[in-house]
Image (cartoon, rainbow, N blue to C red; front, side, top):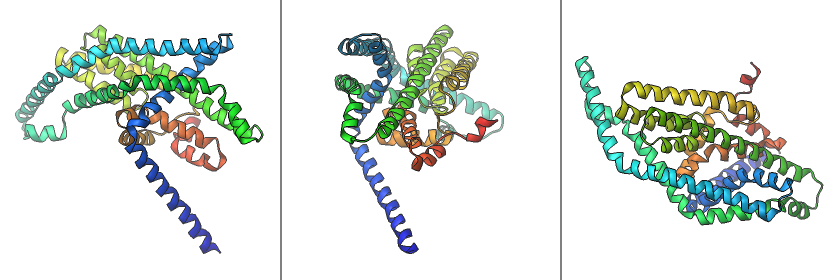
Length: 347
């Protein structure tokens, strides 16, 4: 009997893994369809609290929905007007920066030769290529721009999601025909996801604004672009801040010199310490979060599945899965493994 039980358990594990592989392969093949809906869900989750706030103050649902959608469109147009030009200018100037970086690397290699270290330019660039940070930033921004060509579909989907949000609990109650427990669990999961996404949106916006203002004050080229980049990559804890800082630091080095490159580094460190290590944990609490290893693995995994947008949404997607797993006793242990070290919060 025990042998049959173990074989049955092993078979269930194999079937589950096979189903997981099939689902992920299908999601990757259909990323051009799935990614706009992921962005729409992301925007809907962030917008839902404002819609509910307007309705609680007596604003009719249709009017509140129009106001929220108008705010989303206005924000999108402002960002497109401010950042779009910077993206185009940066893309045109990218070869110049890459050439300057190669010259800087050649000068550094010559300095090493003077110190008795025999390293060829080609070997050094194979292992340490600063221009790759520029190419990565350009590729991420182009990938996001390609997805935003489906802006009409995204906004339309957001409208329908927000319209259905208020009636969905009633539909679920009617479909299940059971007591409130499953519905209450679903509501708790959605509330936690909304809370995480809203706080992350606020801290990311604060990070982007401070970075843009600081870089503009120092005279670094394309401050709005790097502020927007910091806003996007702040959704990826630890790793995202490092990726966002590299292009701005390199440009500060090329255009303004070593002192301003160090000042740019200090700006990013200060913003991420204050916002990421002080304000965000205080607002969010210790219940939500993932370990640094899971952050990195989710960045690689979701980036492979959904491209640049998957990288931006990697941690929100993982957090959503973690919250859903934590709401059930049978899967709570998986959520604990995904989360940060529980011992660190007790010290």
